[in-house]
Every structure is written in structure tokens, then in C-alpha cells.
Length: 395
Image (cartoon, rainbow, N blue to C red; front, side, top):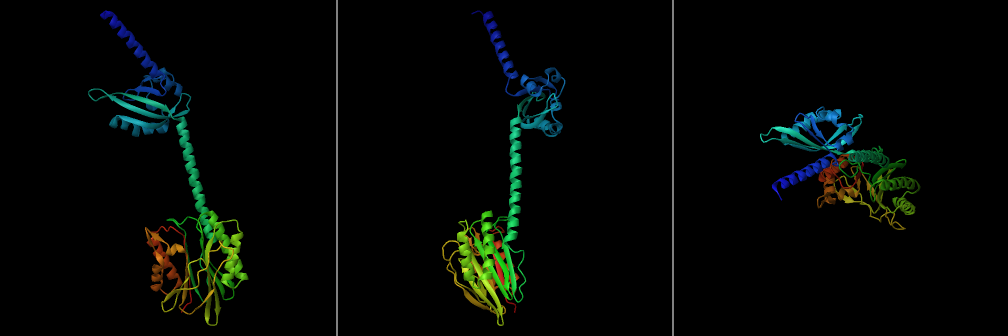
């Protein structure tokens, strides 16, 4: 083969390669355009023209890349995009809205590279433009889903707050001849979770009061529904039956008939005032026993712990009578106090007793002091609900 023929073949194949490269550039699956360092368009492929509806003669040598952007994008181009190119030499996956020829907007992602000559001077900017219409719509759907989820969470928190307000008295009632104090704290750092703990203090007759505290297994709205059932069943049963054990038996029967697999524990104290002071009848269905603190500072449990309620056909509970004199007090609480955890350590009964040993005289100070210590023990984020009620005969 002669040198002349080899040279002709090289030119032929070179032209083919140039044609193929030009065809690939022009029909690439994304838009391409080249600009001068000042942004003036010098070259653009057919894909970009098809995406935007612009004509080549209206862009090349006439308009700058920034002119093709929506107003917000122009500001970002001048304050972030252009400086990024100058400092880093490239910019990747920058979201812009391009203005089509008809004025509509096209969401795109832009990758650009700044080319410099041997002396380090900017020569051209090469930019790839990807249609992001579907991606932007997907992002909008994700944003809408996020907003909907946040709204649902806000509604859930509001529902939780409303439910808790209906399940727990806003404040302990005033009982003539007794100091009464109570506290309730749902689980979690913000205390917004609906729990199954509750307490109630209500009057049955003249000098005749009932204090109840309980814990329905589980959390959430379903637990709250059962908690409401328990609370109002106890109120009705206390009117019909004098003994706590009888009222707890009624509650056990109601729970077994109710369409739920949730059980509960309840501590109930019937307080009657007489000429000698107050007589307390204590009954517990699977609940931690109340603590009796005498005026001399001694602390002991009161009552006998019976069976869980809503589990067996017959609830076994025993009534225990305790005479309360001046300075004596009863403390009722849920296991969110004694079983409060810090790593592998429990708050425990001993800490509760130590609070009672060193507590001031008033029922309110006892409740507040115990709650503060339990929360501090768990660094302000209880894992379980906390309910505390204290009743005290004034000196």
C-alpha cells in the first residue's frame, strides 16, 4: 500500500470518527452545551434544543447560559454556581429550572466542567443537562409524604394529649380533713405518648372517698380505651359496693366480657371519716401495695397483693383496714416508679422508702420529691408511665 493511499484511508476513517462523535454528541440522551468563560453559548446539541424548544441560532453566540435559567436559578448561578466553577473547576448535580422557548419551566440537573489552557486561563465551560422532571415529581411526592406524616404525628400527639386529659384528673380534688396530692407523667422525653397508667380520686358520700391507681398493659390508643373503661367502671362499682375487693371483682368481670386481651393492675383505697379520724380499706388487684408512712417516720406496706384483673374468671383480692391518725400518710404508685431504669439499674423500693424517710410533712412535697428523683434517675426520659398519689392526715 502506497503512502498516499494510507494517508487517504486515515483521512476517511478520521472523518467517519468525527461524524460518529458529532452524531453521538448531537443525539446524546442528555443536553450538552459549551459556553465561553463569560457564559455565552458557543455550541449546543440537538437534545438540548429538543428539551427546551429553543433554536440553535437563537442561542449560539447570542445568549448566556444564565439567561436560560428561571429567576431563582439566576441568583444561585451568580452567588454559588459560577464561583464554585472558578474555585473547584467543576459542579455536579446542581438543580435548576430552565426556561423553555414557550416560557414554561423544565426541571434539570446540571454537571459542568471548566476547561483551562496550559497557562491556567479559563477557555470554555462544558455542561451536561439532564431532564429531572420525573425526579423532581418524585421529590415532591416525598416532600408531600413527609408533610403528611408530620401532620399525622401532630394529630397523634394532640390525640394523646386529649386522651390523657380525659384519663387523668387535671388536679387532685380538695378533700376536707385530708391532704391529697398526685402526679402523672407519660413515658418519653416529651411525655406525649399515650400510656395505660391512671389515677383517680372521687367522692362517694359524705366523708367517704375513693383513691384508685392502675396500670393497663400496653400503650397507645387501644390501651387508652381500656384505661377509660377501667376508670369509669371503678367509679360505678364503688357506688354499688363498699369493699374495694367487691369493686375490683366487678371490674374483673367487665374486662373479661370486653373485646380486648388487655389486663390491668389496680390499687384501690376506700377512705371513710369517723370520730376517730380516717379508716382506710385497701384492696389491690395485682398492683404494687401502697406504702404507709406513720407520723413517727416508720414506713411499711399496706394491704395484700391480689391477682391481675381481666385474666382469670375470679379475681382474688383481700381487703385490709388501716387506721390513719394525724401525720400518717398513704402513698400509691405505679411500677413506672420502682422499675424506672438507668442502664441495668432499677430505681427500686429502697429509693422510694428513702424519699419517704426524708420527705417533708405535706403530701404535695412527697409526690413532687419522688417524681423529681425518678425523672432525674432516668435523665428526664422515663421509659414507662409514672403515676403517684399521696394522701395524708394533717397533724
